[in-house]
Image (cartoon, rainbow, N blue to C red; front, top):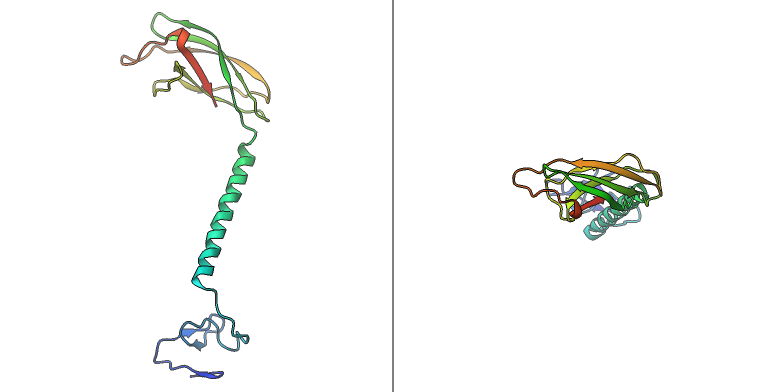
Length: 161
């Protein structure tokens, strides 16, 4: 078959024009009528570079959205106001939580033995704390399991996030 100034043997491997479907020489994406300036298609490096830039821009946008969504949350410093050990190994604890963030939010708090977290630590959520506000929380820590040490009032630590 003849296309413009070149002849294409249809019995041999060939490509087709991506716009009109006419046969083109192998490796040529557009026929002469659809590409009068004879511009070459993008190289593999250009295609992969474009994809890499797109992925990078996507991650940047995701990071900006996450920063916007979470930027005014916390921190939530907490301080123990009072703690009393119970006969069964549990404890009563009163502590204050402050929201140092820019908007009202709920803190997730963990009571630990001396600041070292374990799976047996009680974890709970506070009520809503206004931006810049402080609330007081009272909790009874249940008696520890048979393999856990007792809750010592002087060593209780509260971490909120």
